Structures are given as C-alpha cells and as structure tokens.
Image: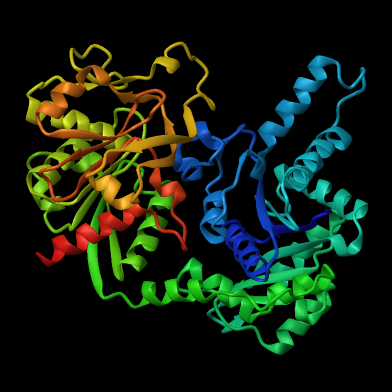
Length: 536
C-alpha cells in the first residue's frame, strides 16, 4: 500500500500552531476511517531534545520505544489516541550524524558529500520510513521552523523533490500563515501571507491549501484575494480563528471543510461521516464543569508552562472526566520555605511535585511534600517528585536527617535515592537514561491498583536515579508502601502512604499516556481526590 503524504509548513512567524493544525487534520481523517500518523521534522542540530534545557524547547516528550522527542508528538498522541515512535521525530542533528557516519565508513565511495543530494536523500528516506514500516494510508509531515529560515531550507528542498517524485494526487502541501489585524485601521492584512507564499515558491514549492490564523473572520472578498495572489483555489483558503482551547480546533477545521478539501485533492473518498461524538462529549464536560479545584504544580521551570505541557493537558483530560475545572497554580519550588509554605500552599486542593533534574529548588519541593503529607492534602509526585517524597519521608518520619539522593549529595550516609546500576559507567548523557515503556506490577488493595483496575501496567520512563531497595524494610515499617514494582529489575515504581487520603509517588511519567479519549487513571483519581478535599 502506497501512502499519501501531506506536508505542513509555516510562515510569517513561529508558534502559529502547525502541530495543532496537523493533529486536528489527522483527527478528522482518522474519524473518516483512514489510518493516519504524523511526524515532526525539527531543524535544530541537537540529535534530540533530551539534553535541552526545558526553557529552550519546552517539554521533552518520550515515546513507547524510548525516543526523546519534540513536545508536538504529545499533541499527536493526545489527538489520535495512538502511540508514536522514534520514526515520528527527525532532527537535523540526527540527519547529519547518520550521513557523517556513513561517510566515515566509506559508504559514499569517495564522493564529495553535499547537502544535495546526500542530506536531502536522507531526509526523504526518513520521511518515507513511516510509510514503509507502518500500515498507514496517510502520513502527515510537519516541517519545523518558519519558511525562509536558513536551517529549514534542506527540509523544504526535500519536500520539493518528493513532490516532483510522487504523483500529483499522492502528496500536497498545507501552509499555515498569519493574517495580522491592524487595530488602528480595523483591518486584516494579507501581505505577510503573500510574502510567505512567495518565499515558499522561491524554494520551488507551491502550497495547495492555506490555513490562515486570524483574530477576525475572513470575508469572501479577502479569501478571493488571497487565492488569487497565492495561486490556490478559493475553497483552499481555510480560516483558523482563535478558539478557547486547542481541542476546539478539529471541530473548527471540520466546519471549514479542511478534511474534505484534502481528500478531494488526494483523490480519496470520504469513507464515512466523521464520528466525533466522544470528542464533543469531552468538550462539553470540559466547558461546563460542576466543580473547580486548585492544584499547585511545584516545579522550577514554571516561567515556561510548555516545560510541563503533558501534565497540564493530563489535568484537562482528568478534569473533564470528573466534570471539574482544574485551576493549575504554578509555584516555583525555590520560593517555598518552612516559614511561608502554609501561606503559599494553604488554599490548594491538591499538590503535584513535577519532574526535573539537578539540585536547584529541591528543598522547596521537599517542604511542599511535607506540608501535603502532614495536612492530608492530596499529593501526586512524578519521577523526581516521587524521589523527593521518599527523601522527605526518610528525613521527617524515619528520622534520617541527612537522607538524600546521590544526584544532589554523593556523600550522604542515607542514599535513599541512588544512581541505577546500569547508569554508573555512562559518561555520555544523550539518550542514555532509562527510557520508554516498562512493565510494573501493582499490589492489590493499593490506590494505584484501584485506579488502574488491573495488576500489570506499562508506563513510560525517563530517569537515571531510583529508590534504593536496601531501605525498603525501613520505609514499609514506618508506613510508606511500595505498591508498584518492575518484575525484572525489582525497581520500586510506585510509593504510597496508606494512612493518607491520597498520597502517591510514581517513578514513571503517566502524563505521557493521557489522551482526550483515555485520560490517565492516576490523574483521574488525583483530581477526584482534590474535588473531595475541596468539599470537605
């Protein structure tokens, strides 16, 4: 089966929402009965975002097969409810690394290695890899960056070559652009869009469909003007108005008939009317909550909410399930201390301590966990948050005041969190953590078991340090249970305090698996506990 290809490019400015448009289009095509996947081509030279500071690029998203990828893959999974893989994210760094390795091996037989054809050939190979390895009818490829950027040029050239190689009905280009509104003259301006398309044409690529981000509705006359100057038909000028949530975008694109236009150009039939009832039901619950809860997200990258993107979206999914609006309050862990913790956290209905690395803000996280434990506030710790819960318990319940993680204090006498055995001889950081999906067995009668309603689960990981099993007996005797364990490594995956209304820490990242149609059970139960706490 030869798949159809859709390329999504962006112009005028960055952050217009190419990933959301790509995911929304994929959702509509999926709802019409087609098997669809999306891949992201990132123009930065890092091999992957795993070593990037979250301030630089937002959250690093981890796939089932352990790839550290762009956060847009999270949107793809949340919209399509299907997992992505290593093949769904390609970076310039990975492309050049592969080509240079081949050159060192002598694979090019002494040829001069150049951007064209060697780099573009590798980009094209990566684009087509999903079509060769997966059973997909349509593959959507999002080109990162903005048309005109130097670093994006090899990708645009690769798209040009593929469009030349493929039949007209086997590929098309969707170009996302911006219609700025001038408040002084009360008008939308089309000139930036015209220039953006002109730049694309200079690279040899004619867009087939224009999706125009706008704050105001586009008139018929303006659509005709855009179509005329950008060489597309009028029906291919799609209005993308600002909407309250990203989850409104698929319905907006349905109203604009983006999916029908795409299918028509690809000469595909609309197999059926799109079934979006579950999606609409989610939106109804999300927009008409019966409850409201305030949950504090304790982290150290709070200046950039995208650093916790999957967590925020998981709260939206779980909130809708519980018919509750989750008001997330970002609280910097560096600003929490014993003398102000009650003031900062006193009005919260739940406390989540977020993942992260390094020793900055650690003591604030530990103080917040102590407050949650002592005041019966629903608590949820993820990865580093779980490790800090273990340290807090060791210090303030068991009585080991020096208890710590060897990540922050290598000389502590009570290393309750320690470097995993398999990580001790690793010096290169990129892609070497415990990554991807692993099995976890749950203890019956635990809160985790009640959430999942089964004894064996699979969850995604991204960490180097673990609970030190030498101390299990001490923790259990003092009231902290180990309720989730990896059957192969015996790694402690979940800790709970049974006497607490809701106190769970997990070594894995449940937020990665939460989707619109399948909200994560741990987030669902956490939000439910917060609702109950708010009403007590």
